[in-house]
Length: 142
Image (cartoon, rainbow, N blue to C red; front, side, top):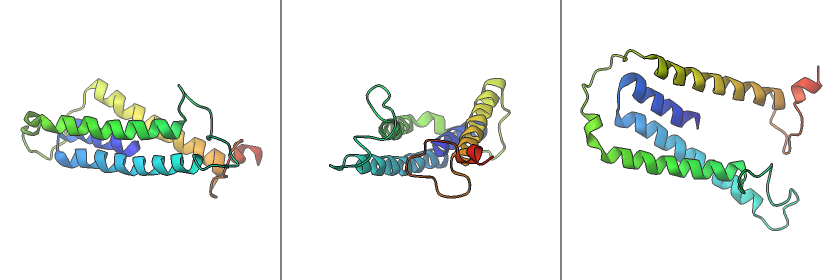
């Protein structure tokens, strides 16, 4: 999902370009493939981990929501690309001046990314993550 956000932020910073949409689409395709793999791992009959991993949110597990979001992103970007007028801006490589709402979006993405990296590090350390993490390994080793 970070790759999708980077493509959108590049549109905000450098202007709308098909290459920025391509970053978002390829990121969404990769995310959809990973989400699909995770779904398929949990629908195998006789799965010792049960019918799913983690708690369900509105009836779906987070990896299923991930697939829904990735596919919706691909659809929305496809629809946005039908509107060709936004590709007619001046083709300058100069970054745009960022106003406060755009800077807030950038800051939010950076903060969420840093939080995700930190929580993953605390959960797994520098080793592969456990199959069923139920504690923060780095905090229990203190």
